[in-house]
Length: 204
Image (cartoon, rainbow, N blue to C red; front, side, top):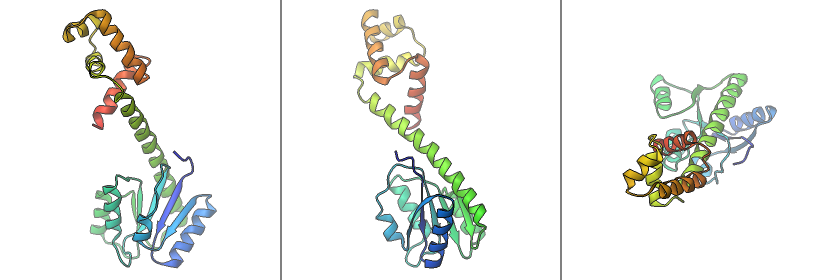
């Protein structure tokens, strides 16, 4: 994951793109701007803290269409919608669809920078969480079917004797399986293993 945050700007008004790019630069934020949804959606997105400043009323597309396409691709970085004329139903729709904020132009630069900082921090935490889950999933995929059975029983608090009985095997064999799965999952304690199991279960 790249540690450098990135702010995307998608607006079909050149003056807005220029002013936002300058504002972001003044706050030492890296940005990329696009005049259309089509150009933006051709971008190669990388794992980094990301925020999108998105005009609702683009010339060729709706900002909501862009939001839907990003979600279809599994991209969930925060979106701050911008519009020259906003309505309450429009803002409600944006927020319900997961937008970070909905702003009506013109807006206060400092307020926008505060919102961007919040959005980037939120996305940084989300990225860390997702990468940890993906790593956990990769480790789980290396377990044998029997090791997975042992893990499922171990995280319920069952002792080795009980696990061996449940699986119809010896205690020594159950211990070996448990030791192997603890190593593969990189779990130092049963609590670590339980947290991993919960993480996998929440995202299964």
